[in-house]
Length: 325
Image 1 (tube, rainbow, N blue to C red):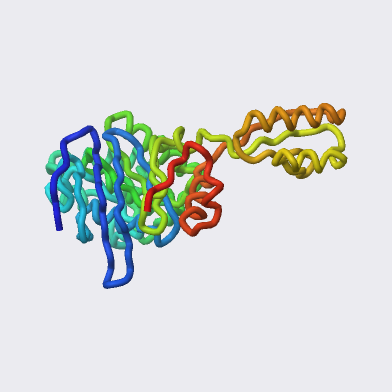
Image 2: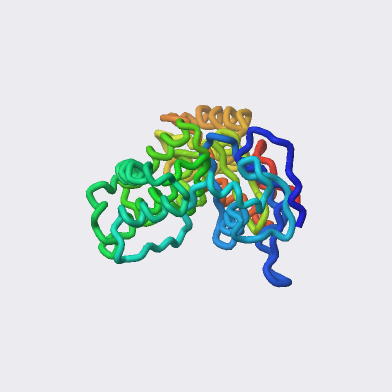
């Protein structure tokens, strides 16, 4: 395996052409390249089996890639010295049920080599930051799933890491808890901590991430800032105050369709939109509103999955680059 170090940049994670095959046939990663800026919140998303967990485990030196180039926190992939500067919350974490929350955090602080004189203060600080102070002395066996998630997040932060890698951090957490976790992630970013999120909760990622990468079939299908990926009009919805049935043929001729008393025009084509409005006005149809609907992360993910399987490949909007395969 080639562990060549890339040129030092402002990237916290700079991975190039990461490949991993299990056995002889199961390709988990087929040449993945991602970059995560220092002090940003980065989201990794994709369908089940896309290779997200394998990529995270390679970053954390848990799984060895077949081949890869690049760095994590300035150290080559596979270098374990970087791990002391990273906090990690795996998706299916477990803590001994007979320990209290405070005892668990003290134990992990010791594992992370937090100085003994700082451990108690760190335990208190992170319990408070994740909203678990009142359950500090409660045994883990009495914790709910949401409480376990919040304790796991505190565990990942015990060593005040430069980067924290979180796998499904809000899974099982109630809406109030999810909001507090989002606020904490934003605070970490402001303090200069790099946050790497692996989650299927697209709405959560959309609210906090600066940049995202979408994995489909072990390949990067999309990567960029949220603005770059979502700042494209998916369709226009023209709300009408009259019957448009008589104009159906003309509407369809311009690429529109009638739906629930509105006229829908897919894509971003101002000329077609203006022509469609002219047709409606000429037909004495009152126009109540014209509303653009933009891409969400869900739209991007569905479109990327369709492109990977060949369905909808021709319908990709201008400005969203396809990953060359």
